[in-house]
Length: 295
Image 1 (tube, helix red, strand yellow):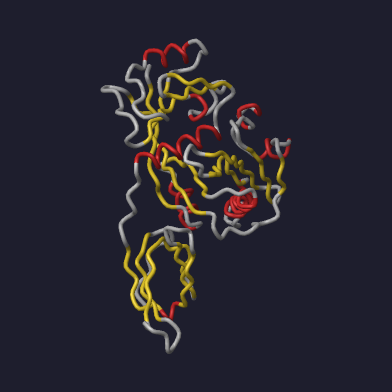
Image 2 (image 1 turned 90 degrees about the horizontal axis):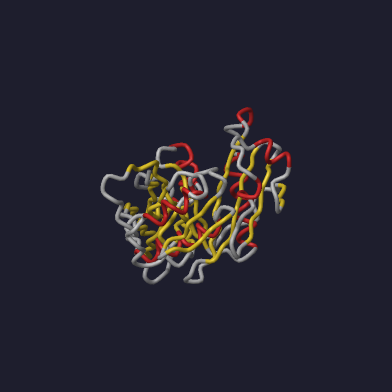
């Protein structure tokens, strides 16, 4: 069998069909979601094809599928609704969010409508009135970063289909972060920021009293039901036991049971460990988003 690419890679797989089949071979193009005695490839429709390693004839890595601007805009819209801060306001194609100055995501303006205003002065004034630094969250291709503006971090946005997600481990799920959840999470994010969601549902998971995470289901303008995972953390003494994967799988199972179609994560582009975890779970890169300081 050919050397296997990393899980999450888009591939073209040719394999043998059962003896006597006509034709004797078949092909599938999609993302590799499991590589072992059996290979599993998820195609663009979310259908997973399972092939025994001994039946593989050829396996070829492919470049990622191109992502259209509307795809980015729809996902970013759902993500903004899932982390809107405690106050939000639309302004000329931008969604402005305020969250007590805690987290860049909850305190930034994101361009969500076509042709957002190029005049950022009102955005600067809006944030200044709330006592927080003015910041843009600029997804790939949705807005040209102003000349001379200072970038302030980059997120890798990764996605996966939820077509075959099972229930996941038995984590404790609550509608609000309880004291145990808050005690495990290292960042002191205000509860009203954590629980904020627009036209959606949010839940908090705790696994083995050592791992926590948050999930929010929201709907994009094109009707896709997205679940976003965030605030994933494992206590230092419990690391390398699969708990980060487990708490994420518990939340993905919860979301699939509520009709979510796809999942996303927004992870710092230099967080190699987190990116490797999500790739191993079948997430692939969708686009990137850069924070831009306006003053």
